[in-house]
Length: 347
Image (cartoon, rainbow, N blue to C red; front, side, top):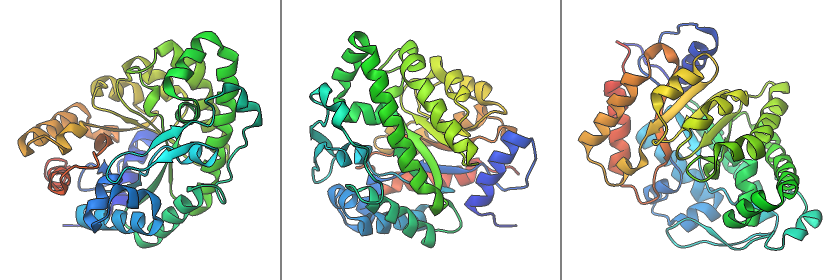
């Protein structure tokens, strides 16, 4: 039986989606979105993982070697850009980093805020180093960068409650901030192009679990489209991940022109399959709860449900709906890839 690489499987998914070209492969492409959970594979804390590029690379390579995902996502945290522009962060030993001081606690400081330089400022140069090193070592699967989208950066700089209040009271200010943050997203994305890794933007707070569809269409969609159009001119594909419930904005997400869309467990996979058909590769949406507290049987059923809903000819990629929890037991990630190999075959 012929052995296929992750690159071949992912390439086949894109060809099916955009050209209807059938490429012979063995199974549906699959990967869990992994970052901080991999620290435990190398005996490191999450803080060490986020602050030491060498440990970050070592952990991700260990995860690749153990799980053999078709895409290995270099998932760090989504506060690199705000930190490089003035936020102060706290890094717990084994938890998500958090902002202790926001660069835009005083909204009037926006006019004096400077865009960060990905090659010089904060942890951004370290992240570029991580991507470059991982790409050298991991050749059979896709290595993908994950950057914060403009709405995520804006919330990082200003704070979620404050920014949503601004959206109700000072719409022009939010647009000004979004224009600024879009420049930052593009600037960091540009730095990834020479590395020849995947480019994806995460917009966790852009879901309808937090904001209204109208707010997405008014304040976020135009900037997502601007980013996609910018990179499309350079012939660079862009992925978009939005956590939570996104049913009401699925068509809008597709209309941004991104090449792939990653959806979380609360989103209706059947609706997403129909909406993305022939327009974007669909990725998701196995619940991350299963990687922490689920049984093997529950994970098996979740994977079967996804594969039943997403037809083989759709170019669907099986994945976790969001990042696997940092404290997830490694054996549950083992289950996911074992079951993907077992249940996702095209034979």
